[in-house]
Image (cartoon, rainbow, N blue to C red):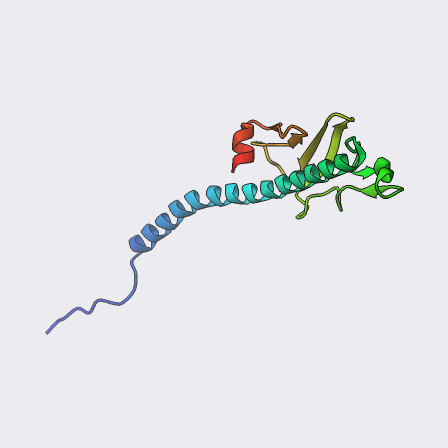
Length: 146
């Protein structure tokens, strides 16, 4: 009696099909994950700008003008001496550098420049009227809305 016993294991074809499926899934997942990480970093910049906007409005309520810099020497109308509007010139997680790029008694513009590459949105900005801007190739609605 001659019976053939099939050996246990996978054939080369089965392994190649499994590798191909994993490669296809990775090709889809990696760009989606990268975009997710970029959006989470962008949220850090938006939070920093909104915090600075709140500090500017608080400053104006007390001093009848907007602060011209993060280290506002004119803060003396409240506390005397030089005091910071916000605790740092970087965003809470350090992905953006924030600054007051223009300010006078009637308005201001604040910006958050990324410390990473963000071609879609680039530098984010907001002014006293709440107008949100970006320097990248995408629209402000997409950069600020997501």
